[in-house]
Length: 86
Image (tube, rainbow, N blue to C red; front, side, top):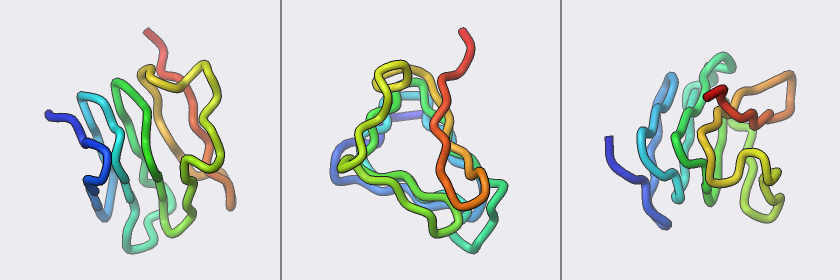
C-alpha cells in the first residue's frame, strides 16, 4: 500500500502488487514461479525480476509505461512491461 522507494526491495514467491510508485527493486516468483507478475500504479523501478529473469534501469522502460500503471510478466525468457488499461 506504500511506495517502494529507491534502494528498497520487495521479494515474493508469487505476485507483487504495489499500489504506489515502484522505484526500488521488485523480485517476483523468487522460487521459480514463471507465472508471477509485478503490478504498480506508477512503474519507475530500479530493477524488476520474475523467476530469475532480470531487467535493470540500464534498459530504459518505454515512455508508455514509465511512471504509469503497468505490469511486468514473463514471456518465455523475456520480461514484458505493459501498460494497464485505465
